[in-house]
Image 1: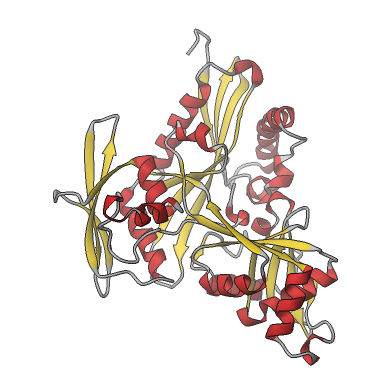
Image 2: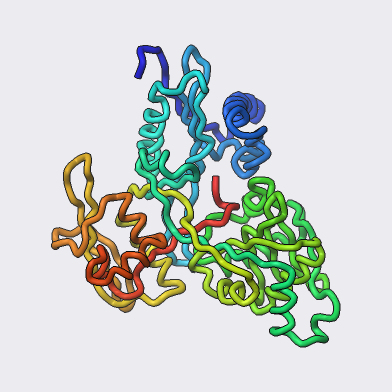
Length: 414
């Protein structure tokens, strides 16, 4: 770093502290972030984009990591805590730090501030008991800090012709004669919120929201959520992107009715086409979306950095078991730490009644670099390795284990 006096500050506001003081301090931080992003992209207002983190009553949630020169902010990273919980009362969970609002003053670039902040953020995440860090951004920029793309996202494209023809094949003519479903924009005081949150809990393999922040999460990035009504009663919800061109999340009581719901939605909103994103674990949705789509793309999802391999690998294997069949077997995975010049080995064990990951001294079935591990075990590249047969790096992996899932709806991102 250049010979310039600077200081690192970690700020998190007390939930019991003065609300006005908290608002004033946060406004200064967000003014800086808004300025940096508005200069680089388009006009930005983080308080408006992410009310789940920056609404007045939520200002105690994020942690602000700052570098200042002469008491002026020059670089910023915010972290938002996320606890990922598997469906079920006694299911496992992992704590994560979602990294966002990453900004450096244009005049302070090249001074190593982002390197310093990323190091501090990781240290803080470990102190808070986080098993992994998550972010969204330019892939190769963040590879430098140990992040890699993880998971598989399926994006379906549906046009009016697709939905008309497919509904004609699925339902009888009388059922398609007039609208069945109606859509009501979801407000924070909606009488349906409790029912919709219970639906979200039942239909999500992994939950990242509480009832308290459910509605705020659905408003992220100017999205608009709508209750799906039939005869005045809720049967589901859809979360539409700001431009109305994409359903970033949906849940319905009866998935077989989704084509009919989608038909009424597209007719009601005069949509010529709509995109729909789902994770690879949402197999019931994928079956029906394939029936009505024009085409589908598969892409990588979020970027992650694993801090606790035992906790994260065990969690992801349990997630996979929610919708797939894992062969009963053991597999020893070696993770090479290039900086320390060592290989740490983990025994992944699936039995008839339990999944466990633990450190081991046994010989590794495969040794991978940290970034390589994320790529090969969670993304489409897993299929590429499998196609290589005996030449593939994970040729001896137990049947059904990989790729591991990792996808969160946009409402859960930061």
